[in-house]
Length: 217
Image (cartoon, rainbow, N blue to C red):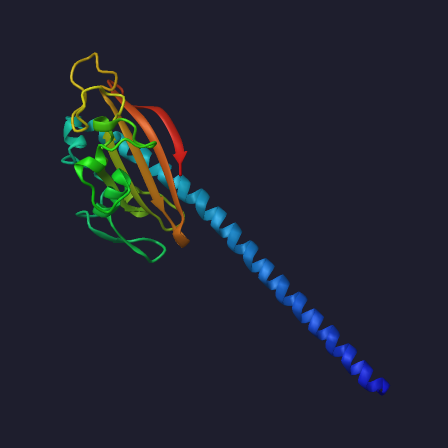
């Protein structure tokens, strides 16, 4: 083989190696960019869920009858119309009523036996929360900024009550859950990002006081 032939082969091998390195670098940069974007979106969506929860506290404090809230009759001023089909920021669709059932029992439709079922995440039987849609809409409805988000807030009776009636704020001053509500706020962002904030609040003469607050999965 002539020196020219050897040189040509060497040049081709070098070019192939450089091409492979360039492709690997491009893939690495693209992957890191997506990871960074997902992390950024996750942080903003988490803030969005927290903001949605905070936004509804004045409405809950102003509610004359917590039983109306627990029955789903009284809702927040932060809604974008009747509950039904909604388009999420990632382009998928969800039905708020089916989503409520999923929050309640993990199924698109819940029966009473499903709602009263004792599970690790719902160990209170008949006192299990019956989550009611309270506020829902895009971030613009809640007056928040950042990435496009859709937020949903559900409210339920505090499971520490002993009245075995999740639609009634415990009767009698001795009931430990009287005046307390459980809240869960979900925020949905780009690329299927979702964050959940859960809180327990208590109503007193000063309004709604947050007793506990955590980010859930």
